[in-house]
Length: 191
Image (cartoon, rainbow, N blue to C red):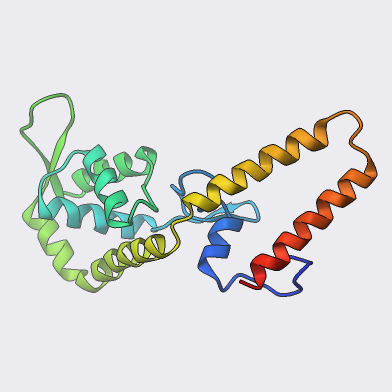
């Protein structure tokens, strides 16, 4: 989708892309940016398997701990859903790459096996690339902390809904709102 008021694609800017596709304003970007009806994942299944295994190698962890650690490593910008993490942990068990360890409470503590260490060693380059992606996302998140922008966008959305849903909102009102929004967009582009 293009912004017709500026006449150029903005897809090269990661902040703009995140704003347009739900990364900052659409809630938590659990599956990464979305666009045109498709939901892209931060990692493919093999990459997530390697990331989880690498984190388990560092120390035995529960599934929820793994989700939190990935969120921490990404600077809060990405957290895989339990619906992706827990089946992957089951797969790691089935593959003999991890094993359950004794733990207190109902949560399963996962540790790495010797076969898991070997698997990571054989795929060290892939592990490095996947972990670097989390680090890069954390740096991007740090540079583009959009909390004030999210607040302002929420305020704008509320004001638009309130004003345009009132009885008596005329065509002239709609055109004036559009003019104000176009003017604001132009000012933001010139920043």
